[in-house]
Length: 414
Figure 1: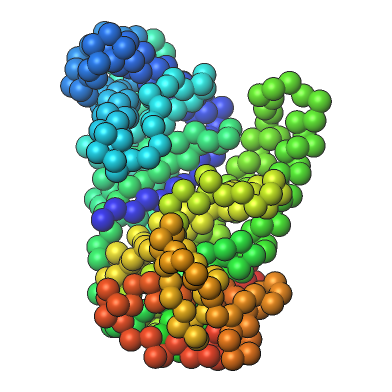
Figure 2 (figure 1 turned 180 degrees about the vertical axis):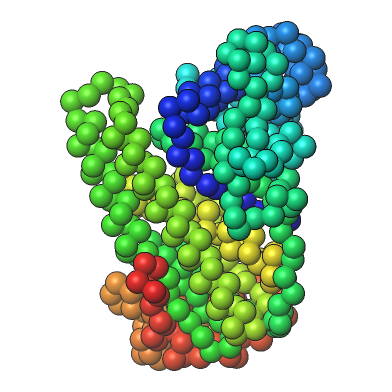
């Protein structure tokens, strides 16, 4: 299992010129490789392998302008994207893929990721030394550049280095191996997670606990960003972009990444504290692409990074030895958990099916016997019921009290 840490680079004038040069050459080489692969596919129906691309592009001036291993990694990415394209086409034939994929296209003019393998980078007194290759040394008299080594990482454990350009800034990504952590958890203790918007993650367990990770602040940040972008693009031509828009976008993206990491860590800490060894996440594939809740709600719902927080929770669960299960969540919000309503799968609802309770107002669900519980907590508990029989889970510990008043956790006020 591998982890990744991003470090913001604060380059001086000379270093910034070097980073822009190698990232620009990476972008051009990527497009050269894509052009050859597309033409080969159009004419023969075949795609080139990574070794074929490396051999054919070795004389390309953009290949020669980069360090050889970085150039090879750039072309390997191109080859893998076309290989994935063919794999998705086979998936359509086999019925495992529903949306027809698009042939990999060219990158827009600009900058692209540059990757250095472990053996290419050396740790010197001045920091991490990144080579530039003989051709650059001939052209500009520069053979390398230096970046600071993060103090919280061990140089020997780093497997890969990436120079990532994004919204006018440069980041150093360090990929390193993560050792698994042995946790004192019980697979019979389970936590169900119902993702939403205002209540970003509603969590209910069979050990009598429940909490809600609040999403209102993140939603507010996203709305402010959209309004600001709309104002700056007003009366501007299609595709308009500026340094101010880049700064705004980068700030919003950092806030979203911070929210994802905080939310995932809250879920993990809760599991470890309560010895919960199984996490069940409710997720309908394609719900972001196919949802239709109106233009305003769609904008908020689609842009909130729920998929990323799901993946981050899964990554942490793998690291700490916690079982992570993803299940579809159809009818979990309508059915009553306390009344044990049947939970059909989407498209397989029995004729005459009707829920026992109903949603009386925003955030409140009334059961058949008149008990009022939290809507999202009811959905999270029903997500547990979706997999309870398959996993042999005992849900008697899901108390009515945990469904009535789950604790609300605000990300940035902890």
